[in-house]
Length: 480
Picture (cartoon, rainbow, N blue to C red):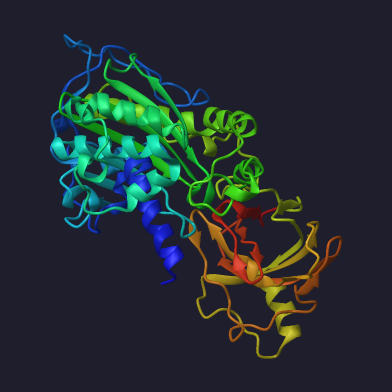
């Protein structure tokens, strides 16, 4: 593996451990079904917001009051704090795997703590994760004192410190370090770490005393080759810090805006420092519109762990999938109507005509004597006549063909795409090399169930033969 990219991967994993998702180091294999109620002993004193404002709030029953008004979690296993069913319901996504920490992870091997990852199914190789991390013990105190000391020197020193394993004693690595850091409670040290982290990374923190006197919410955005964002909720105990965090890739449009705030000399760094005057207003807007909604969802999950009867987190609790904010064509649950033009990565796509059943089969037989009905009698071919135009700014012609038109879907079921050996496509075939301002029209052959009234066409743009990110996917209804 190329050394640069090996180092990049290693830094990403370690940074996410410390800042966003410690669960990245977990091992495969789902644990036994956890029980949320066994994890929590004392409850918070107030009823906070639990989901984005555009979601109808359920009626909350009163919380029993604790003497200190703190959330106290006694569980020793982070996988027992949340249930897979509650996580899926809160985020409206399928949890593909629940991964407990493996012995070789940095957390466990260094005796800093342990973690658990809820890994969501995703339409691409990008990670969508929820992590639960427990930090505790003297080694955790040493670790955060070590990172604070590195941060005070420089952001580059901080990145180097993240790569060191095993983690050395503070004064061994930094002889002039403030040894008084090692005498601080872990909760105070962790807060100081988050405050110091703001020198290198955008981070917004807020004490959530409405949830519990010992609860802190945080949202993080990192730029450069490490670009990512996360939302988190921290519960501080006497000798332990418990961290819930949700991570997904930054939306492509927002990421492009963020990039404009990074000086050229910083752009190839793992951790880039932006022009704060330009970047912070954009970051605040993204935090307010996206990340804060995920924070509310995490708080709702914490409340369910504290008291399952307290509140039910709605399925649509995460903000970016709200029916009120998602335009048609950006989500498979809300495809653009047939005939509407949708755009992605500089291309525009329009469905001009749809043939199916006997009409489609007749046109296919006219195209080739070797074309026959699908072997599966419950399926039929659908012929889609499309226009694809390029409105981007590339100086080189970009290739377009049916490879960017994925299989049809219905009710979440992905259909197989007919191969060249299965059927010969009618002419004109959707294929061309397009320069800005040019367009092409042609037929694409798809499969669907005969009883599917409105299959959905999935468009996955490709640049130079490579598929772009999942945020570029577009969806068009083939129904009337």
